[in-house]
Length: 101
Image 1 (cartoon, one colour):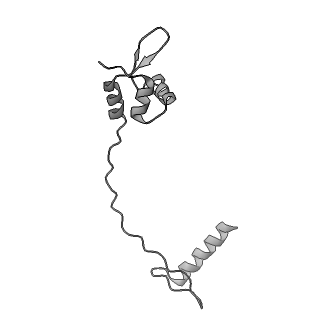
Image 2: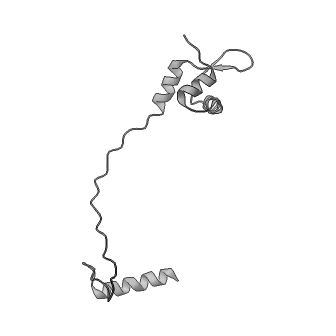
Image 3: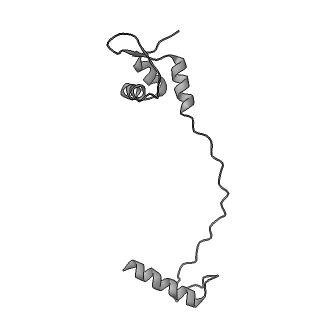
């Protein structure tokens, strides 16, 4: 069985050695303690288990209908907005003005 140093584990996971120590301390990455000073070693299997535990499932795409942009005002007046009558448009303007105060 090959034991990797924390630096070798960090190189494999493309993180810092400090991050490896954090992962071990937080219980996310298993390790082997080889002496009384707390020297840590990690096996390739432990790195593999860590990677497997961090996989994020693929989400199904959300079926979204295309959003139709509202027409913007043009020179000489406003373009009619389909589905909103003049009374509804007027009350909408008042609500927006009140919110902007």
